[in-house]
Image 1 (cartoon, rainbow, N blue to C red):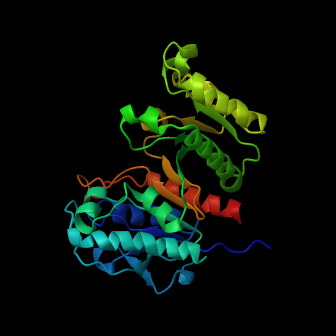
Image 2 (cartoon, rainbow, N blue to C red):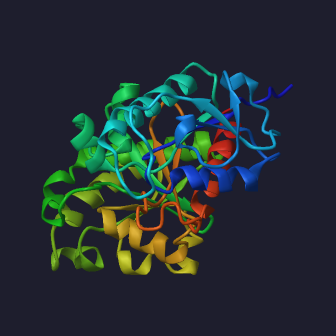
Length: 322
């Protein structure tokens, strides 16, 4: 018999951003489809909630958004960061990880944070959610995937200057990215034999060395070796030919060498519905693929599409793992 999965825990993110309002919109759209509980300070939440004392109390049928209270030091004013809340934002993420790790929640969905606010208010030492979650999990290397129904992309290097990419892009990093992605597609997406398309770093994938040697010296030899071990790999491919509909039908995920090479195509295909997934963690983590949007916070116009997609993807991944 398949056991009932526990709820998804949702960390509130920056209270001055759009996270809290889109959590309400997402719950209204998903009530009865999946159980979720928001970790937040009850004082910060404007809409109606059903306050619970523990995650196990959540059924997914509550008439209003289930809330598990967490004390914050500051107030929440839409669009105006209060540095007193920085530590609360950090602690809520850690509490969410604890709940998932303990098996009380099936997955963690993180609402957007504001990195500068966390640095200024609490000395947050991490570039973002992904690195902090890896530290909490004790995981040396994780992978960021952006996914929508039409495309999954993985950038090998992420938030670094383009001039630094050739130095950071090592054979070990690329191999780890490929292996973590393959394992996650098998375990969390139910793809028995994942097909990975690997972009080149340079225009036209270097064109045999005429436009750069990274493909000849590093990427191609690595792909040959991994292919001989049984991985389904194609590339290095010219990135400008990888993302039209016919090309996308030939692979399950595209591995890209740097941030914009991966994010431009997915945001062009599905700007509102993309989901950020962290691969390689011992628990499931998804997030909407947008920021805090201070300029529209509190106006009731924030689009919950990406958060809804993130929750559905987390629920589906949890089912696959079970």
